Length: 553
Image: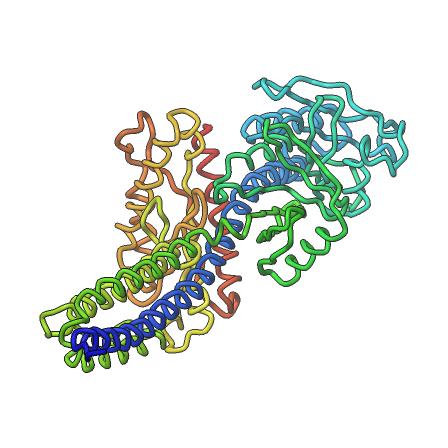
């Protein structure tokens, strides 16, 4: 056969093209693999942070509700103790003493969200009867409390928790106690109770003061939680091994915890980290738990596939971009095969930097051809990835509502304060703040007005404490850390803050900006951040009570 030069040229062209494509394919695989690995590692870390933050935020909301009930009962108990020495009332078993407590207790219960019953019951040991005291209740759809027949404490055994556990449990504990959820037949509601044992000045057990709240209403709120798309939330009672949740119709359901799930939750509680478990359908879920102030656990369960959906999307996007770059490059690789060697070497070097986590380097080819386009695409991909990572970090540390630091950034600052590597926090003060009237604003004018009030409060705090870090740590709670010059001017700033508020909030009729606050400084009496914060928080609550009493008067 005659020598076919064209066939030979075609064969040689194919060899050159095949060799070039092979090199480019290897480069594309390296780029794709590095990008996928980086996205996988970074997304996994950020997903865990987001999941943990969601669980902490939701538990914080429920703890606020529970703490309000606890605070209300504690106020009634303090009033009862003080009443023993006020206005000449010294007989704690007199009708006058009981009437004063009843009137005050009903007034406090009317101001406590979710309160369905309030009571003060004398001990049969000193009253001579198991029916002494009062029990006032209201229906879920009613705003008024009415007197209800009291339960005879002596009619039931002390081990009967459902009927008289509210009396004997705090008495036996000798301290304020939360009762596990139980069904109250008197008001036909699933409730939880907070009860305080009361003692006379000489240590004699007088009786108990308590309040019942609608536990079903609290559980129902879990249905409105934004825990990804299909995440589930439940309340878990580890003592009784029960979980409470809402079904698809919104009804309250309870179920026994399996031994496996009980062990999982116990493990999470001890290790304080997320846990992956296998589902009955063969899938995997990520669970986390947070302990509530009443001793129960908030249990969050989210399918792992849903948590990883963003990561999978980014991984697919990286693969698609790599394939596109590879496909575009093939069109131009037939030309200038010799000229592509040097640019590819540079691209390989920059890729290695990216593989090592260094996204700062950039390389743009000046060959004025497809290699230049390829280098631009790779550089842009690196920039986009770096921007995305920075955006994730910013979102993880910024409160979406107000634009100030969130609890994550707050915890990072507290960690730096405790380490105090450079002596920056040798002297500092903590101001704990709580926005008043937020619930009233939400209930009266809607949550849009509540958002306006939150933003106005955040803006005002930032204006006064312009040189200090400001954080929103909860729904209506803020924290400011004062150091350096602001620490020296702390009293002046706090006076300016107090005098400058109480102005009308634009867009919310009849509402003024009112913020309760408390400040505490680092000292030998308060040698760590936690003790400083607790003192500031205590002072804030006292201030909040004073402001509340002034508004009522």
